[in-house]
Length: 194
Image (tube, rainbow, N blue to C red; front, side, top):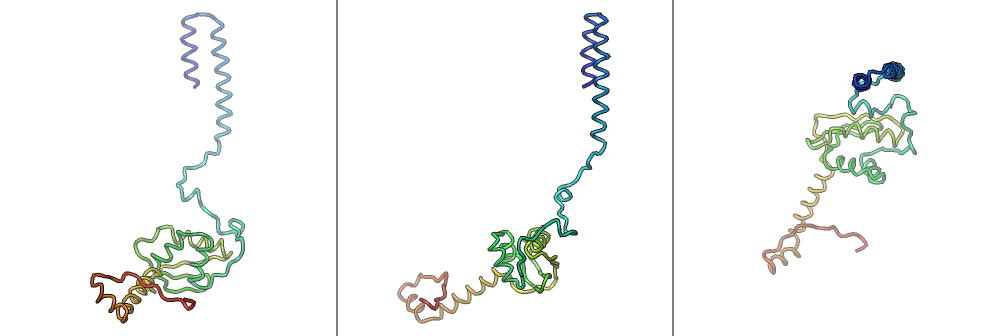
């Protein structure tokens, strides 16, 4: 900025050749020197370039960083799924049902195995949410052992089992005799009230 002003004034001095224009140059120099000094004072503490994970860091060390709304008791994996549903945390519920195999669950500690589709930030995000909900720190560890089947896999196996048992029934066999190209694709268990 300073150089541009000087170049502009220098060209006007050459055209005018007047002593007043030299005074104007001196005034601009003084003003720019003052601005440079003020700008240097403002920029004494320049923040470092940080990556995204450093800027969005949440402090868990002191409990003042995140306050629990109401303490929720999470004592089982099913309770955790129910809380995710109540709190409308669909991402966590999906990951827990589809991509997580439970190995061990106890108070403030979860041991899981996972498949390749699990989100890379899932463990960090889940531990923060659990801290938010319960007010206690949670340790989520990864295990090499297979653990239980995921919820979705259990549901799929149960569906296959229900279909196979329904295919053994007399009603299905009678239906196939009358409609040979029919296929059973889903079975809904009968409720007690029905």
